[in-house]
Length: 309
Image 1 (spheres, rainbow, N blue to C red):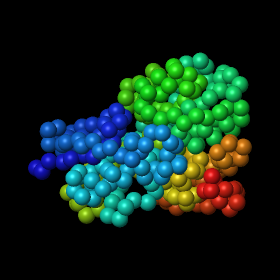
Image 2: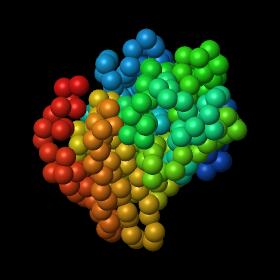
Image 3: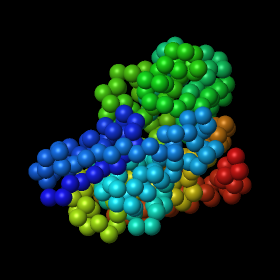
Image 4: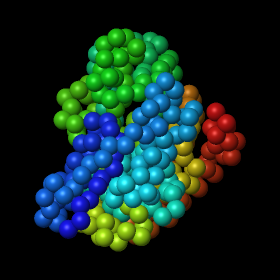
């Protein structure tokens, strides 16, 4: 059989996710690990560390170089964190599979407080996520945010150096790295609903590459695909970008899909949230419906202001 090359970012988490896909592909098809290579590709998002992503291009900064390598045939498939994916893919690209979703919750990490409630007045929150910053400020308007990027070790050092008093990381990433013990507190989704598609790994392939598409189809987890489809449709309807604080969380019980959505102003002073319930076979339609619902509740002025921020 022809060898397969997986493309990924070079962060420890991204490589761990690519290795998970490699191991599952090998197990599903009885392949030797030596027939599946992993190629690390440095993305713009990895190179730009001195500015918030919302100022320089948003989600696509973590995918465009990998997608170019996929288009050029340098790799056969790309492994991404689904929450980093733009809602519109380049022509000729498809999301062919989603691995079973990890824990969607955020982890609070601090060296000085056991919860957000125990942080001192005017505490500095280290985050590059507008959603997390807005949710923190909604909880405590006195909090200040500072841009905070880097892997787990880098962020822990920044905390130790006093750059920030606390930060949030996706629990899914900590679990995949075996670093869940770093979490000071796991946050409830009622107070800190996650980013759309948080905790899910997706596999991107060329639409016309039936060989690879059929291979990765064996890894697709139907429940995750359904839930992420609804959340991404919600995001797409709101024209979600790194300039828009948006959260979404779905649950699936049998054929019944419940989708919760939230949009906030960056300062946390305004928030609109709602949910829809319906048949799981209509996941994308439910996502679009909830997006339109929140658009109507928030009003055009609110959303236009976010886009200009």
